[in-house]
Image (cartoon, rainbow, N blue to C red; front, side):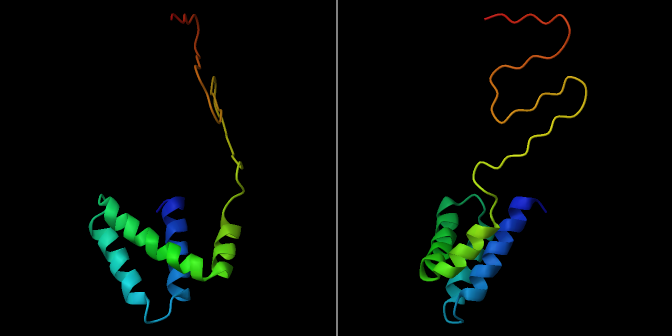
Length: 103
């Protein structure tokens, strides 16, 4: 499982734990629908709304989750190997011998 999925799972677990038992069925239904219909933007929006509602009602949880995120602008770029190129943003990059660029 990728880092993004793990982060999403961690956020969802934190939201679940902060929800009252009476509010959990609504969150559970939103998660289930989003899982069953991954391409449905309405299902994704309903889940986001559930998460947003919890974060709005629990500023401490919002601060805890924000602290887990990497700082804005923190980027690690690695290039490895002969003629490797690494950049956060790149226009035209050319590697190789005797390369000609034409408009």
